[in-house]
Image (cartoon, rainbow, N blue to C red; front, side, top):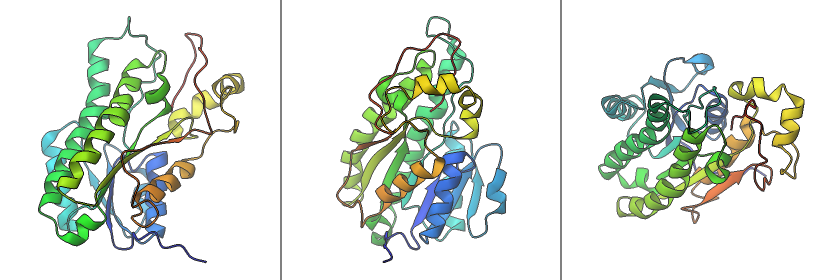
Length: 269
């Protein structure tokens, strides 16, 4: 039996689409028949090999770039964006405690991981105001958060702070604001723990570290990018999740918390 997600011909904008989770999300939404605009920052990567999608570059920290992104998405992909998936993000590789962190790192992480989502959501909502009822019918925003936003992350406080603000600040706020523009509009966050992406490749080679990282995870496994992408698709569906809004979906194998790691440890969500 086939399952209709109600996303055929729906315009979906996915940020950070060249990365592991973003790329798998693009492929899943392609299978569901959506019209996809795939955003990237510096490297288009494997997106260049996918037919039938619109690829657009933008710096999410730049207000003018974000305005241009939504304008070009509408012009090149059949009208206004209906579903916004805020997937992009950075995780500074160097372990740095708050006491040692310089202001430049803090500012850049928050600029990408928090100000970027603000700029994207603002531009999306402004465009949604002028959109037709068909676009508004499937309107929703999905953030990709992190277990770091729920449990914190020693030596990566900048990343944890930004993710927490998105998950517990923007998500519940925007779920109340979007309905003033699109009465059935929804906002949710999908929050993974460990995911086998290129960003986590080095850390995942250390089996002892992985064992410690999964110590409070009942499923005792690292997620794949498509594990997260499928949850994004389910939440985006007006048929499967049309009455779900303001929620934080943890895609973390049942993680209950974090163990303390030694300073030399490496971690990425």
